[in-house]
Image (cartoon, rainbow, N blue to C red; front, top):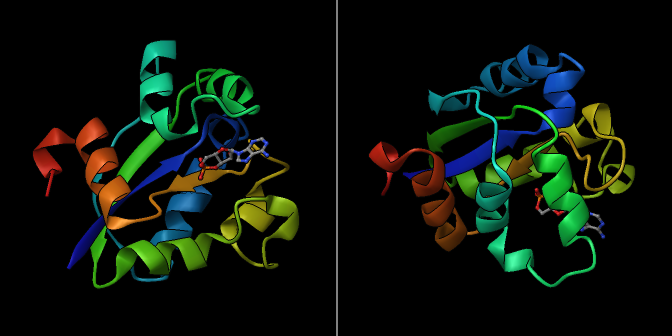
Length: 136
Ligand code: CMP
């Protein structure tokens, strides 16, 4: 069993796509074990995306992530980290397979609808960041 962290990003919340996106995960049978809506501070967004610090898009990414509330959630299941990444589609919505969440709800980077952990190490950090009681 694995856990992964998914964030429904501010752009999706603003466009009222939150329910549709949650529904996509549920209809696929994914098991959401924690969820909340929060407003990230600049410090929190910079800490969450620390691995991208120094990249040319970092400032734009942080500004976007604090532009409104977002909805982080923990999803649990067998091999769920890779399965979720396949399900949401490529990071760049323009390159994402039709029918994936990022293709259907994203526009362009960093407004790619959702975030998902990309490894066991990042999932550990990210789940603990938002939901310390679900740390593994
Ligand atoms: P996410 O899964 O949240 O992980 C890091 C984010 O950085 C990524 O989705 C995109 O939103 C953003 N990102 C990655 N590459 C670029 C880029 N070249 N320009 C703008 N944003 C980017």
